[in-house]
Amino acid sequence: MGGLCRRNEFPQCRSSANGSHHLDPSLYDFTDLIARTVIARAGACFDWHTLSAKTPKVLPAQFALDPVYPNPFNSQTRVSFRLAVRTPVEVTVYDILGRQAVKLAGGVFEAGSHELLWDACDLSSGLYFIEARTPLTRSVQKAMLLK
Image (cartoon, rainbow, N blue to C red; front, side, top):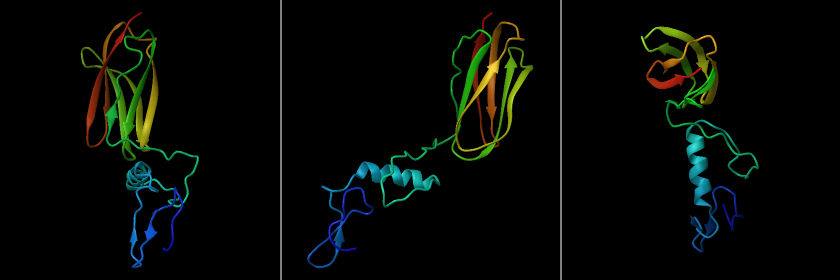
C-alpha cells in the first residue's frame, strides 16, 4: 500500500519516508474497525473496503430468554429469545404445578433474535413458567395470565 488512504477504507494507512506503513489516527475510525472486527468474528460477511449504507446484523454474544412482554398479560404476550449460533430450541410453557400447558416452539433456529406470540386464551388465570431450552443451556421466565 502506498500513499494516503481515504477515510473509510481498510486499512487506513500512510507510507512513511522509509517505506513502512502505519495507521493514521486522524484518518481512522477505530469504532468502525472494532465493530466490523466483532461482526466478522461472528461470521458475518461484508466488504471491508467500502462503507455500506446497510448496517451489518449484530449477533447476540450468547443465548438469552428475554422477559415476556406484556407481563402480566390478558390472553396474549410475546416471548423473545436470542441465539449466538444456529441451534435447536424448545420453548415450553408450564403451569404452577409443573404440567406442560403448551409448547410454543421446537426446532432449529438461526442465530439472531426471535419472537413468539403466546395466545393463552384457552388457559386459566395464574402464574406460568416459560422455559427455553437448547442442547447446552436453559432459561426460565415467569408470566402472569390475568383474565
